[in-house]
Length: 282
Image 1: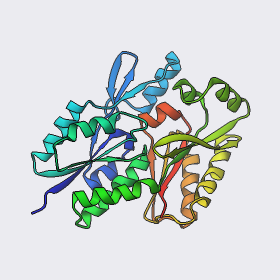
Image 2: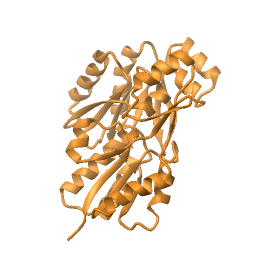
Image 3: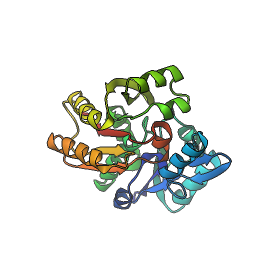
Image 4: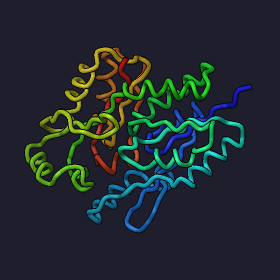
């Protein structure tokens, strides 16, 4: 009899409670450091805490993956209970999580560490595809191979309101940030080959930019996997988010459009009033 399969993911996938329960996913939190204090992502720290810390200190939070020893303990808990494991991590281009997990999984033949080459709900699209495959009766090794084929087809991007957070995090120059802010530019940040790159730059207020960004992203992908798309954001004003959802739904490209609030990792890099549309290309 084949082993049962357990999906585990690090907290950077921005998993909602509903999806977590539907696919019985275990989430392993990243560590978020605010100065000399450490917190567990999504457990005892939220995005508002990061924003308040930044506004009061001018400093960004820092995130850290678990150690190989911690991952090994996590894996053994499930393998000793008779499970095969599919473990999804944020891209190795952003974090040591993937490498640490691979070290932990050495010698464990039933642990499949999946390099998502992505972040946020770009990872979650892969996780949900794996969950659907489990439901269809596929085995863990077969699923891991199938997900590897999907990974390069995930389209993840975000349009951001300010370059302040990317600048503070060392991901763009102060001159670029100043110029963009003076011109009211809102850059599209794309995940390409597991790393962040700057795509099209929009001009204007973010509520006017978001519809054009969505149109551009969907027009660039005429053949998409219809199963689902995500709108993932860091907005407090839900009007912009709801309008974005309605715009994506109106295209008829997707069977369902899911909404998630981005977690600490996206917020640390992109800040407030960030929104992305994420989906899989055929």
